[in-house]
Image 1 (cartoon, rainbow, N blue to C red):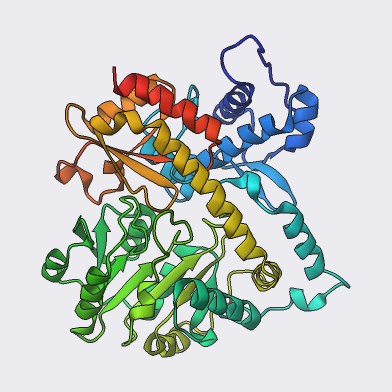
Image 2: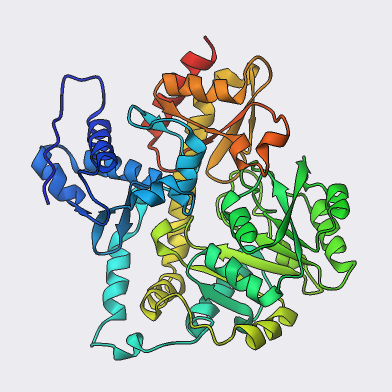
Length: 466
């Protein structure tokens, strides 16, 4: 298809922003329908007589906000409008937390985006061809229920060397996304559990537990992470934690608190910790923090990881590392479930890991995110008098907390008036209406260029310091 987009070179609005806004309006009005394929960035650039980087930036913004999705080797497709309104996906989470119209947004500090400009397209294309070479019929047969053994071995090797995880190949289960694996875990554990969650937390996990009928106990946090005193009083026997980089606060749990959590889990039979290690690869200060699972000697930590943050959201491949006791229960209760990740995708990822491409990709992304991280911190340095900056040592977002004078709603509104989209921290709390929280906004930077970051920060400075 072709898109006839009226571009105004005399407008003060960047061309990529004009393209982005036009496609947004077309999707919202229904002129572009769900599942409709958009022209490639190259074709659109040629049609509009602009650079390909311009169309790529527009598409990246649409991807980050959930208006479109990228399907490997097929192109860009319009998302269903229900997925933009409901909170059933990452893009739904973005829409829910914004509370504002994005049409006039100049810079979106989304905490969910990643840098897709550096996706290793050529390598991925080559590995895909290798997987299907010589009409490999074996790839189209049903495979191992837990995931292909070679792929799980590659995951085990990576987790052991990079995260300090101790496990066998048999303990790893591969699944299509963390939500699916949490649902599978509920089948393994059964219903007789009360789950404690850090508050604020990753709301998608909360929604999964809640939808499965579990009683979820929000546990407030202190400077070390989940508050153990509140955890003990909650009556929970499972605790869902993100010790390497808590979302959204950015807290890195110190060794002492990790030991306390392991001690709590060991005090009673059938107590477990679910460790969500969603973006541990990106750390900018000090040495990498080993996984909590590596400290576990009693088989109480259930480890959850994903390739979505470090490669691409569309990969939708995650993995669960079960303690040996739960592995027996998995085989008894759910071992007959077929793997939800195709053998083709598993084989591509296996080659990506085994041939060293993954490590090289991570090194490139660390360098890119470190540059963006430093650019953002330098640009917002004038705010330090009136704001506390948090979560800056790891991950791909930071927090700005007003020391005085502003509510969270005012911070979001002031940013919107400047054409900048920021995200209120209160939306990540369980039952946010029950308590007053500090006026804090979340600023993600992964999907933005350094120029966009500086531009957005300058717009914020003018509003927040006026």
